[in-house]
Image (cartoon, rainbow, N blue to C red):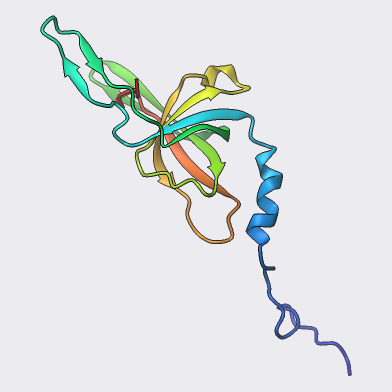
Amino acid sequence: MPRAKRAFGRPGTRVVPKNWEANHAPVLTTTRTATVDIFGPSAAGAVEVNDDLTVTGSDPTPLAANQTARIQALSSQETRDLVGDQEQVSAGYLVVVDFALDVPFKAVVHVKVCTDTSLVDKRLVVRKIARGSLRWERDLWCVDDLTAPPPD
C-alpha cells in the first residue's frame, strides 16, 4: 500500500511532541546575558513625606530577584511627545525571562547587569505580556517610562 501524502502527517501522530516546550527551553536560557529584578506594579513601596519635606520609603521585595534575561530595544516602539516645551522620548524594549514567571501588568523590571552598559540601572515598566501555549520564554514588552516611580 502506498504511503499517504498528506501535509499533516500520519493518522494518530502528534504534530507537536509531548514535552516540546520543556525540552527546548533550556537551550534559550544560554542566550540570556542580562540580570534583572522584577517588582510588582506598586514598586515605590510605602512613601512617607517628613516634616522637612524629605521623602522616605520602604524597600519593596522583588517578585523575582536575579533573573536572567535577554533585552533588546524595539526601535518601532519609540515615541516622541512634546509636553509643554519639553520633548519626552519613550523607548520600547523586549525583555525575555523564564516562562514560569508570572509577571503582572505594570510590573517594574530593574536591569542590574547587562552587556550593554547603557541599560544598567534602567527601570522598565511592563506594558504587554505574551501568554499562550507552545512558548519557551515569557516575552515582556516594556517601556522606559520616566513618569513611573523607581522601586527604591
